Length: 497
Image 1 (cartoon, rainbow, N blue to C red):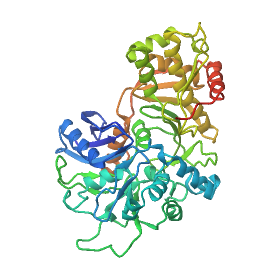
Image 2 (image 1 turned 90 degrees about the vertical axis):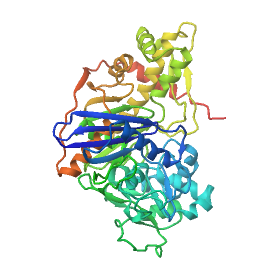
Image 3 (image 1 turned 180 degrees about the vertical axis):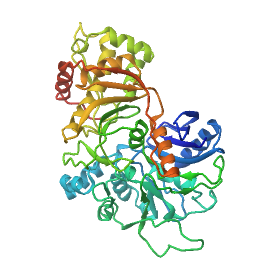
Image 4 (image 1 turned 120 degrees about the vertical axis):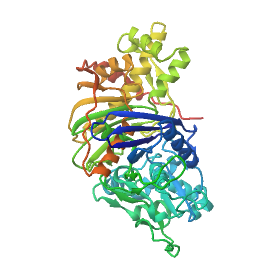
């Protein structure tokens, strides 16, 4: 039995799954937590990965490994392979003014045409502009720019600062994949390459793509351009692991992926599948066979991890909306679901627009949440619980509709993530989506996608592991729910103090 492993290095934790390459059967798994916050030292991710590997029983019998990770973050490295500053994560919105500046300078149409997306605060290019302007001394030290999964892959291959890694700081050994590169705002899904002029425009310095690990003793110090990871296809191995802590030597290491592309690969999603992922953030994305360009900036025209494309919208407020309202009501998730199901669709007119952490879709980084429709009759615990579920899913349904308006084919909705099994979430999903709703069996689909990619890099053939279905429902669309939500959006939301 040949085993492959997949890693999901997400915002909140690191998860490792080990699967049988031939059947996809789960053999074992492990996890470890990440620090909270919107800026994190990458060393914490490495320590969590080593802990999760040990929690999963180690990798001594594993033939291949790949890492899927949170998208967009900025990992800036100096010439010695040290992290210049703590990594800025996708949900750090301090670069929102930089995003507005970049759009004003070149125009939304130009960004969409050249990269498939219009910059928002999440994207790496905006964080580079912020770093250039806010921390110029740190910016001057930057010799390479990586994404979170790129940096972890680099470490698995044995590279890093000289005092922390077996092979030292070879920046030309950095690799990434097309899905994660497409979330930077300086890589083009249509052209399959970096737009180095856009990188230079954002950061003020020239860049080049890494050329692969250098021969021992080779010196690249004469080239002052910033190094960007070499972009690999899904079936191409990045190299083999080097013994380092809990990581044994000789494991084939795949290119990795962004987390949403990893989930699509883990689900074996194909054209016609519209995926709703409800985690720390919420996403709605579809697999397509052509690149998508949306000059409005609502839909990000990303690439996927398998050679296709992944038009996507993201919301900053997803499962945490339920946690927040559950905490306010003093109930756990099960009781919140029971309360929500006890209320009528529409929550008696109570509507929650859940911009608790600002919002990315629509692009309102400074917004706050609003609760409208409060009357003596509507102000019940049941209606508030229902409004939380309806608000969270209505935001995602609006985003999914924007994806479909780009000409994307959709025949069913797949709901995954921690909240997918919540009975109230399933019930409300039927009422806000006009397509059949399928809930796959619970699983670590991002890590599963990474494991599938690891098997692809090992064998040269994409594994076909079909996930089982937990539940499926026909649509029971209630248009009034979405209409009331959109009307409440029109009331506006207060800016942050």
